[in-house]
Amino acid sequence: MNFQVTGLALDKMKLDSPHSFLDSEEVEEAEDQQLLEPEAWRTYMERRNVLREFLTTDLSPQLLKRHHARMQLLKKCSYYIEILPKHLALGDQNPLVLPNTMFQLIDPWKFQRMKKVGTAQTKIQLLLLGDLLEQLDHGRAALDALLEAPDPRPFLAGWGLVEQQLADLSVVMDNFLAMMVPGHLHVKHRLVSDIGATKIPHIRLMLSTKMPVMFDRKESVAHQDWVSLRWFVTIQPAAPEQYELRFKLLEPRTQQECTQCGIVPVAACSFDVHNLLPNRTYKFTIKRAESYTLVYEPWRDSLTLQTTPGPPEGPAPSRLGKSSLPLTTPSER
Image (cartoon, rainbow, N blue to C red; front, side, top):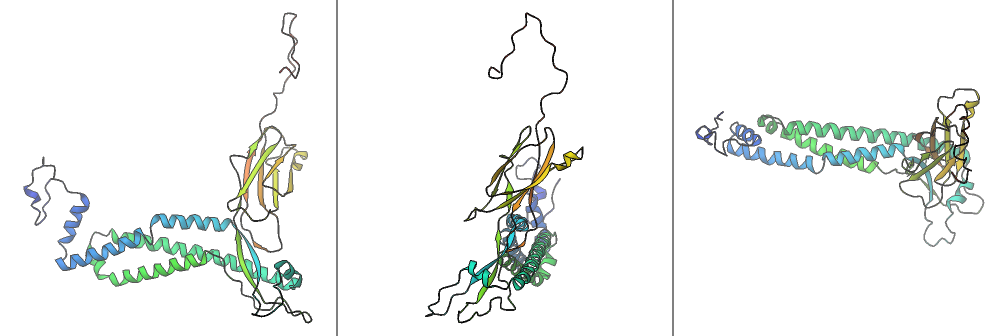
C-alpha cells in the first residue's frame, strides 16, 4: 500500500524499506496539515499543545481519580459542630472561655437549631462537591474529544469557546478544592447572652470532620463460637474515642436465635464477641458513639463473618477391642 502525500514522496518508497510505514499519528498529522496554510497550521499546533498541556496537568485523569477517591472518603466522614471562642480585645484581662464552659452558657434549644443548620449545610456541600466533580469529568471528556477530532478547522474556528471552557473549568476546580474543607456556620442569632457583669466573648461555629471508622479486614477473625474484631481510623484522634459496635445473626432459624444480636459500647479499637453459634453468618457494624456536637454521619462500616463449624455430630464411635490402643487423656491429645 502506498500513501499519496504531497511533499513526502511516499509513493516512491519501496515496501521493503524500513521507513516505508510512518507512525499513524504522523500520517494523520501530515494529512491534517494539507487542510491549512502554514501559518494557520502553526497556530493550530500551538493551541493544540496548550489544550494538551491543560488536560495532562490541570485536569489529568490521575488528578480526577484522586478527587473521586477524596469525594468517596468525604461521604464516609462524620461531621461535627466545633465551638471556637473569638479572641478578646487587646488589653482585656478576662481569659478566654473554654469550649466546655461555652456549652454550659449556650441555649440548648438554639444549639439544636444550629445543629439542624449544620446538617443541612453539610448535605448541600456534599451535593455541590459531587456536581462540581461531575462538571470536571464532563468538561475533560469534551475537551479530549475536541483534541482527537480529525479536522483541525473547527478547532481553530471555535478556539474562543475552547479558551472560555478552560477558564470555566479552572474556576470549577478552584471552587471544588475550596469546598473540600468544611467552613464556617452562619450564626444568625447570638447563642450566648451576657450574664450579669461577666463578659462573654463571641463564638465561632465551624464544621469539622472526623475520618471514618473502618474494620480491619485482615485482623478481624471468626472462630467457632466467637469473633475477634479490630477497627481503625486513618488519622488517629488526639483523645480516646467511644465506639458503638452492633452485631446480628443473619437468617435466624428459631425464635431463640433471633436474640443473637446486640449493641456494645466500646472504648477501644478492638473487641471479642463471645457465645455465638458455630457455622453461622453474623453481620457487625461499627461507628462512633453519639455525641452532642454530631450533625451528620451518613455512613458506617459493616463486616460479615462466618463462624467455623463445630465438632461433627453423630453417634459415638463403638468401643475398640482389647488389642486397640488406650484412650488418651485431654492433656495427651
